[in-house]
Length: 517
Image 1 (spheres, rainbow, N blue to C red):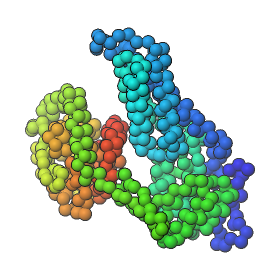
Image 2 (image 1 turned 135 degrees about the horizontal axis):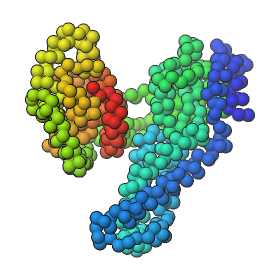
Image 3 (image 1 turned 180 degrees about the vertical axis):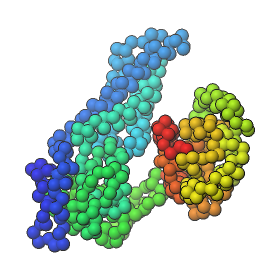
């Protein structure tokens, strides 16, 4: 019996059940699953992903060959000619090695958000090429030419393999091969958050097809999701096993952190008997997650979580600082011509200095001068006070966001342009070189905002950043308290890969000009 046939039967309460454990939502659920194929077709997902990765590895080798054969001999005359056939004869096995390591890491069955998966792909790909380099060196399979090409292949694969994995999963989701139906237990705010997250991260492959909740109001009026999708509430928590049995759905997400702990444990234990994949969202929002070590006390049957603060580790701080310095030194020559042109435009547009220095709160609460291109008139404060006094709506907006979105009378013509393109913050690269800021970190807060940061002192454990989690999550569209929560989360969950992923995501946000005013 197909999913649709099974789910159409979920239209009436099962015999012996009371309080209508099912709602007449079978037709709606059938619509949600009309394109979801059977489990047999989803068996193609893993072989197709492996094939996709093999293509990605060979494409990386091909691009590396083009760089080695055509570009490097022009730059360095000592590089001899190289044959693609010789290259493939030497390292044809590297893509297979990479896929074997992916299989060992269970990369083809895990369902993770893109940036989390990309981090794991980068680590595994690096390990595969380290092994390959060792084999090529020790076995003397090739000369320096081959070793150079292996290194180039590794560098290219760090971008190609994650990108093609993402695109491949998107295609498989469209074909409903990587897509799996999932029921979310809990139709409250947490359940909505999970459903919206699964819609925002399509490559995870989970398609929410129904909620379960005891609340009668939610059963009659399912939660409204940000994506606009309609996901019905199928029934109560007590109906979970029966719905799983009749629908054939074996992927469950328990998102009811407000439930009494004893009842929650009982519910999870019941669902575990029938579920193939069971995810539980605990009531631990805001707690550090990076590097959490899951342990247990066997006799007491107690779960223990080992929590680390990565930014309290001197080695991690040194790695973060080294990363900032190296990348800033690389970027500075590339950004210098752009900064020169902006400086000339500012000087021609309005009176005043090119750079604007303003006090900001740095690491350990110490204040420093933060550099920006001047985007406002010299008497900006006076202009702002007069404008807010005459415009109550603007005053309310300023109090809420500490920004004026639609119109800011303080901003010059050139200032408006460089703000929308986020170019006004380029001089902060000098703050990074001086050790006052980081490329990625919490927002650089004003001294007058110190009082509003009370209880969020974690933010001061690290240097503020040119970009950060707040930058890629909406920027000026985010309220002040939400910025504080995001910055606190960043500090508690820092990792080098988090910084790298936020830098890549910043590029997309800046190009899209989302939240820039």
